[in-house]
Image (cartoon, rainbow, N blue to C red; front, side, top):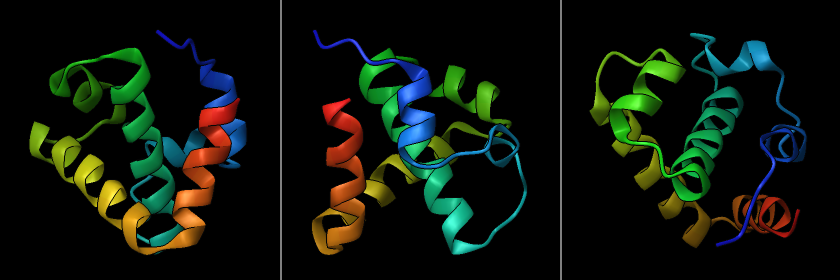
Length: 90
């Protein structure tokens, strides 16, 4: 199994730690949080409940939505796909 450094994920998407739990609903901040959740699930194998607690989400469906949303966007938008590939290579 590939090991990934959490710091590489954060710097790979230019993430400020305050952005993780921010309630800012701007598209950019939301996508950053969704990408972060995607990699938490992919490489750290955390449960939806663990990710929910870590991110400060109110329920596990937010985790499911974030992962599904970023996967769908990666299929459609090249910029999202490039970001995911860049982080995957670190």
